[in-house]
Amino acid sequence: MNEHSPLSHFDEYPIHQFPQPLRVVATSDARAYERYWFAAHDLGQQFMLVVGFGFYPNLGTADAYAIFVHGGVHTTVRAHRLLGDDRSRIETAPLRAEIVEAFREWHLTVGENPQDLLVDIRWQDTKRAVFHQMGGGGTATNRSGRLTPPMVGYETFGRAAGTVSRGGETFELTFGATTGSRDHHWGMREGVGGPGHLLEPRPTTTHLGQWIDFGTWSIWGSRVLYNLGDARAGAGAVTPLEHRMSFEPETNHLLGGVITNRLADGTVKTVTYEPAGDLVAYLRCGMYYGVQGGTPEEDYYQGTYVGDNVVGGESYTITDPATRIRIGGFEDRMVVASCDGERTVGILECRNPLLYQMCRDGHPGFGMAP
Image (cartoon, rainbow, N blue to C red; front, side, top):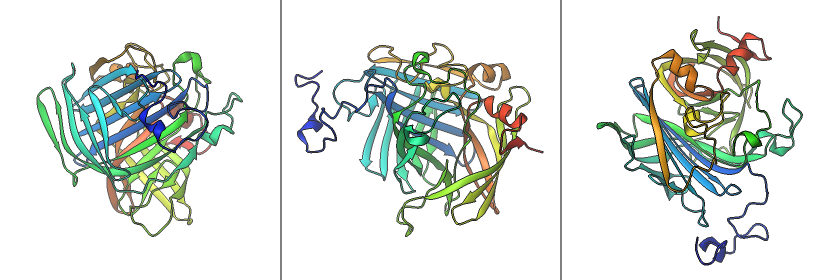
């Protein structure tokens, strides 16, 4: 803590939004958060990498994680620290992110750690990031009749180059062969701070996120993102009309399926999704709230106080269905997406096995693949 606390160097600039120092958020809600998420996947379907950074101003904590999946092994590095006064540090050692050029390029690194997972990549945006309200903006209610937490932010697709090393084996990432997506969201989030702050301790439904980029068009959740420099302003809209999904028989976890989407101009895009092997990032390992709680071993949630400068993690062999069941609950599954003769790789995101239950029970717009 510096001698000017709670002021930071940003408070010298004329950029305040309300009468408090910049590091203070305009709510006392413990679920206040700001997070970055990056996912990079190999077009050759050999590996996937997910990296995230989280900041929780009303809990006084920051955390970060990196997940790497290859050859049936799922490795996670987690790091925790006290937040402090300097909100500009996108770093929880040994994980660090540097903005090289806003909305264009980042530098992501993971230094020495007990899991022997090292990362040094450059990330370049390829789509325009556009601000929007999420989650009902704090005005919609959930199935329990409570207001959904207000969230805002932006997303984009991109590409990555550099190296990832795990256990002495090094993987080369190139801009032509490694694509992905990222987001930056803030507001209040369900799951931040742990069970004491959950609005729905037992969720009964889930979202099904499509993060796919075919180059000339893309889907990120409810929006079509445009290439940088595209003459069209902002972002487009997309409405998923029908989901016919397939699941693993051993776990009831999502495998793939067919989703029919309507774009804002009335165009209908039917996308077929097939699993890219066993490439799944089990995000509970990154402290995301799943149907079985927080992290599989310690039950950490986003923002959980673990200590200052604490590093942990683990590896799982995910070829075992029993392991997938035990660590499952909120997943990013890497998929091969096909539409109108085009193919690419991307991500489907959901809470498992809630999606299976929605499709089994005929939730509106959801059903089983034939």
